[in-house]
Each structure stands twice: as structure tokens, then as C-alpha cells.
Length: 219
Image (cartoon, rainbow, N blue to C red; front, top):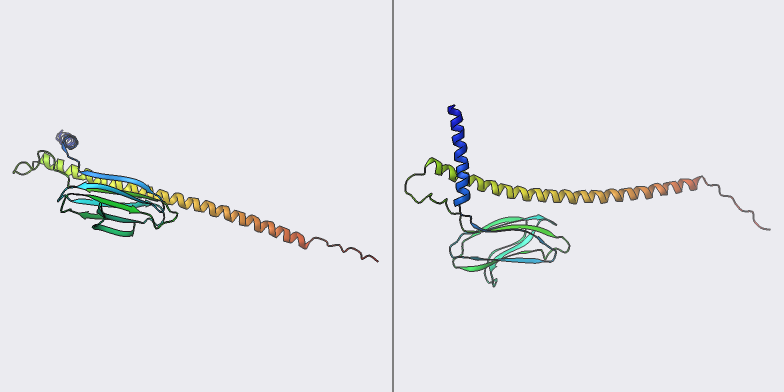
């Protein structure tokens, strides 16, 4: 009976923490997007950031070519580059602006002549605020508050893991489809070669057993 009450109490705390997290947590400002980048193309995005706010740019090439793109992060006029890399598959860059301005980050596939790319990026601005009511008092956190913070952190990790696994699954599926298509074309080519070789062998063998009658010469 006591064990059952403890189990029900834990479940009640869990669902209560989920309700508090959904009702009172503040979501950080973030721009997350997956887009297609054609060959010989360049796409840029803009984000206004306040002074002293920590920012994070994370990107990954999901499919296409050698899974690489050129990435730049600068101000709008491109007078100051904070980040500039060539032929990168994935990376994470953190920075804190010293003044409020609009930043421009671009993904370029101009070096590729035929390969389309699918690129994922996540631009995070600021840190996530604490749960409302937690941190406002000087005393130690209660057991319920500690459980709520732990559950929220675990949910954040779950979301990050789901995003990365979803990208890996999409990338693996794309590679498998591409490999399957190449195998089909290779099989068709091998079948055509075998058919041609077999037909040629039959023709050559028939020529060996064909009687060649000489026509009598005219007098």
C-alpha cells in the first residue's frame, strides 16, 4: 500500500511538472529551417540581435553532393565577417555582439555545377529563462522545483536528440535511395552488356558451322 502511494505520488509530481513546464516556461527565440539549396545558388538569411545577447548558429548539410557548403556570417554590409568557412559539412558557432545590429548568414553552393543540397540550420538567440517562480527566492529549491527543472532539462535534451536523429535518418535514407538507384542502373547496364555479348557469341558460333558453297567459275 505504501509502495503504491509512493508510485502515485511520483507520477503526480511528474505530470504536475509537465503542466508547469508547459504553462510557465519561456521559449528562447530561435530560427530553425531545412531548405533546398540548388546548384550555383546562394541563399542568405537575416536576424536582428541585441547587444550582449549570446547567439548560436548550427548547421548541417543533410543531402547532396559531398555534403558540403560555403557558410558566412557577417553584418548586412559584409564589412565584418564573424564566421567564414568553405566546404563545411556541419559546424556550430557561438558569438556575442557588442552592439545591436542585423546579422546576415549565407549558405553558398556556387562551387557545385549539378548537385543540389538540402541544408538544415538553427539560429538561437539568447538563453532560456528559468521557470517562473524558481530563482526568485533566496532559499534552496524544494524537491518539487528541483524535479521540475530536471524534467525541463531532460525534455530539452530529448528535443535535441530527436532533431539530430531525424536529420541522420533523412540523410541515411537519401543515401540509400541514391545507392539503390545506382544499383538499378548498373544492373540494367550489365544486362544489356550480357545480351550483346551473348548475341555476338551466337552469331560467331553460327558462322563457324555455316557451309560456304563456292560458285562454279564461268567459262
